[in-house]
Image (cartoon, rainbow, N blue to C red; front, side, top):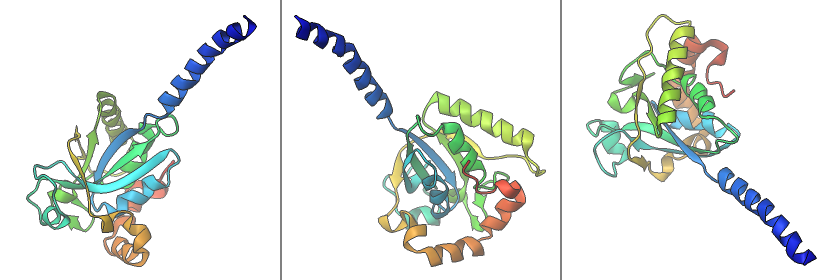
Length: 204
């Protein structure tokens, strides 16, 4: 009888533990376009709670697009990154904060030296909660910004995301010299500092 009672008492604890494990094992997705996807991976890779960052294409009509097709324009897709994260360790609002400080939100269909709709800055929300959070964060940026230009970054529903070719994944790690040459030559960090000051590229 004692063994049976102990087993019955342990059962609720087992169920609670199982629920906790299930809750912690539910990663969520965030998708952002901010110009060249090479430059958008590192800021999110560095965040605790981010499980993976994938460079790819989204927002367009062409199925299974290639880099050459997207970079040439006409597919409707933007270069983007899709982040898988543990919401118990990093909040979506934190991802948004990092996103804003790594883009130029004052331009349409362009980011730094890259011009075209495929290089637009856009937030792709996956849930209604993400849409609300993105809208609130955009309003906060507009209210607190130190630059004069309006914030024109779009907020749209997420669609199919197509991972880019393998050689693009974590390019900053695979080809650091070429990556830094491109980033410097494109004037990305210089413009980010003009916009955001010491918070440029931040991952707080």
